[in-house]
Length: 218
Ligand SMILES: C[S@@+](CC[C@H](N)C(=O)[O-])C[C@H]1O[C@@H](n2cnc3c(N)ncnc32)[C@H](O)[C@@H]1O
Ligand SMILES: Nc1nc2[nH]cc(C(=O)O)c2c(=O)[nH]1
Ligand code: SF4
Ligand SMILES: [Mg+2]
Image (cartoon, rainbow, N blue to C red; front, side, top):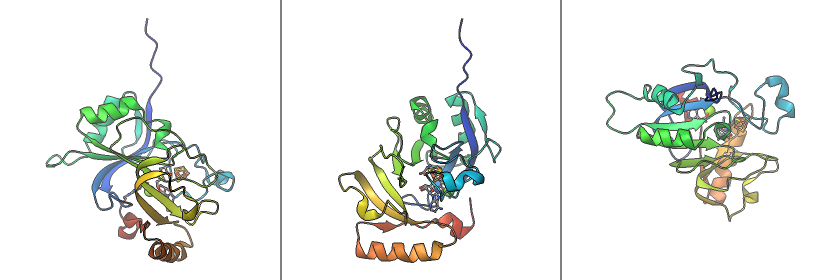
């Protein structure tokens, strides 16, 4: 006999938009937002007790646009492929985010994306190791959380974070690009000015604005 497969991918929402942040800002991409995070429950009543307290995202449930539970990697990938324009001359580009995508995204999902000719980018908090062969890894470490994934393509530090300022980033870490992203919230203007000044004084760092918020798109 075979066991019923209870594993499934739980997706809050999925949408086609421009990557707003970091190296690939401006690039059309399918966003796949997984439910759940290991640094916050996602409930406002728990925010003040969470390890990560500044999150700008709702990742609870599977009720968002194009969200749902997908019982196999193939079913999820086919669903996402449907969001890529039919007339596109380029292969589909997907950004796995959340919530924390590495709680669910496994080797089978990565391999299935590649079978369907996807290029895969990942947005992660860096608390877990990633499956192999992800095409673009963006790590955004969080103060007071374990940091295990210390290599990747892009390090995108939300700034400022008490206990995780850019001078505390170990330069032995292996990333191709280093970005400061101003922490959104009531003080975003002040944080942006501070990030500009920090980059000017430490030109290894570049500024990442959340351009989708400026544009008013997803
Ligand atoms: C919502 S997170 C999901 C992926 C993963 N859990 C992570 O933290 O990287 C996506 C990106 O938004 C960033 N982010 C979350 N809240 C933010 C805020 N208030 N201001 C600026 N960036 C924020 C995260 O650091 C991360 O780079
Ligand atoms: N346009 C757009 N770009 C993004 N880059 C990272 C995002 C995220 O929430 O992970 C995000 C997002 O939610 N929207
Ligand atoms: S780690 Fe990412 S998804 Fe989790 S609470 Fe922080 S910013 Fe939000
Ligand atoms: Mg976002």
